[in-house]
Length: 296
Image 1 (cartoon, rainbow, N blue to C red):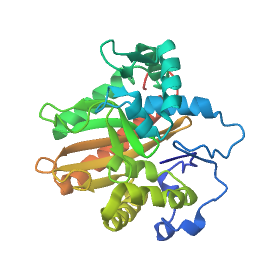
Image 2: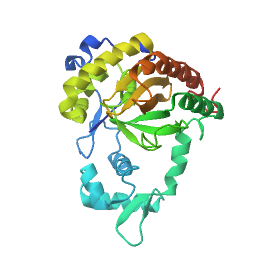
Image 3: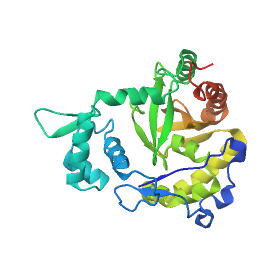
């Protein structure tokens, strides 16, 4: 898996032509790339030890809150002796805690301050939350705000309608970029060169379904250029439909997506009602996400 610094398109009208969406001949081969668990770092200003510390922290997820140093070594590709030293340092800093009755570790309270500082406000603004909740209630759906994290989209805020799904992703859930509506919304903000540069990683993530998914992504990026939103019906989870929009601000890219059972939210309602409502909500949230302080 690679970490790439992406260039972004500032509006959906500037999205790249889909005729060469995955044309690798347009990729910028001079782009600085740092491979996970690889010592071949190209940038002379890149602090490898610091990067490895973050690699260790990224191993902890909602689905795997506790890990041993052996687990972390396998996930990062780093030598276990290196992982052991990194983990000891992170424990001393309060970023990890060691379980007293085992060799397992989990995220410590020392990281909470970083997480809250990264958000525009701890609760993203009362009015924005109210609007997300109103939309979720109206369509019996879940509404989530995500940020890109390597080749995944991390849910940082989620509200659920009164009859919404319980298992469609809680805060901290990671969604695959190649298969999720949130991931596709992020891809819609990238330049043609960066899209082409991601093709091999997206193909690896999608597996055997890549030819089909690639074609669908092309179609949805065309929809985004025309309508401002994307839909995902049955690709990430067969029984759930999704619509998503990106929110581009100076500090980065967020994506806002709606998810519900296909039986509750058929494709026709998703395209004709939910999508336009998400576009309008994203436009209002963009102002607040782009600055410190309350939404609106």
